[in-house]
Length: 48
Image (cartoon, rainbow, N blue to C red; front, side, top):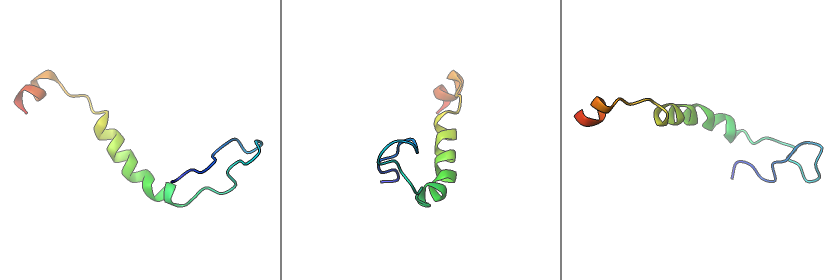
């Protein structure tokens, strides 16, 4: 779990430390989200 009790800093039980795994995962997530949001034309879909 990357975020545990993630809240605004002024809220009770707010997250005081951000885990480093978030930064290690960021480049991978960027690539995945870029691929997922690529615009595909109808002809590309028809040609597989």
